[in-house]
Image (cartoon, rainbow, N blue to C red; front, side, top):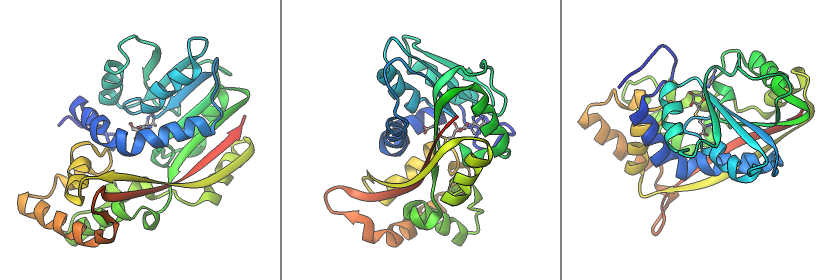
Amino acid sequence: MADNAKDGEVDTSAAEAFEKYLVPTIFGPWSEAMIDHAGTQEGHRLLDVGCGSGAAARYAAKTVGASGMVSAIDFNAGMISYARTLDPSGHIDWHQGDVTDMPYDDNAFDVIVGNQLLQFLPEKEKGLAEMKRVLAKSGRLALTVYCAPHRNPAHAAVANALENHGIDSKGVVHPFSYGDPVVLGDLFQEAGFKDVSVVRKQMDSYFPSAENFIECLAAGGPSSRHALEQLDDTGLRELKAEVTAALAEFVDADKGLRVITAANMALARA
Ligand SMILES: C[S@@+](CC[C@H](N)C(=O)[O-])C[C@H]1O[C@@H](n2cnc3c(N)ncnc32)[C@H](O)[C@@H]1O
């Protein structure tokens, strides 16, 4: 699997697995909720930052309609090239690039959204300053960032089980490392945004079993698959058994494993 220096870099096949297993279950519903929360309307010019395989951008394109426009940016070449294949009519303007240095004019967008991006930026202030630059006056910014691991028990169980096997779980817990709503709100405020609000939201997603959840993370989890691929067959079998036991209380006989994701949604005006 092709990797480069940037954490979480994926090739097209990992991007495809992300889209197939994790977008319908987790990232798609969160992206749609974020776009709705931002008050996105027909005619808006919208930018999806850290777009991944483009779940938010594709949903936004339907919301803004023919009179609006959607751009999307991600530094991951595999994600962007796969995202383009899911937009055959070319309605969305895709860019491979860094959100801390974007190729857009000042005041170019009415809405900027970013689902599960901010926690990955080493220079968060620089990222927010750049978003503010390309956002029109009174335009809206909505960013969604996972809460701490204890509010995301399925992912926490996978991280714990990895540690039990002597594998560094940093990659698995990193997405949940910026979960303080006050810190998030202050970051927006200090970047000069107005009318800042942060709301905590929880969603339930169902996977057939804990084993299946782990297989989905191993195939397409941008942050977790590198940790999981360090296990040999026996290690992976044992880890699946441990996680199954740890998450027994979340199993519904009909629906399967309930994976709870909790995130803070920050919304503000430029
Ligand atoms: C967890 S994924 C979320 C993808 C997408 N927003 C979604 O909800 O499906 C985080 C994405 O942020 C991208 N990313 C991280 N840092 C970035 C940066 N500095 N500039 C652009 N993209 C970045 C990663 O490449 C990855 O695709």
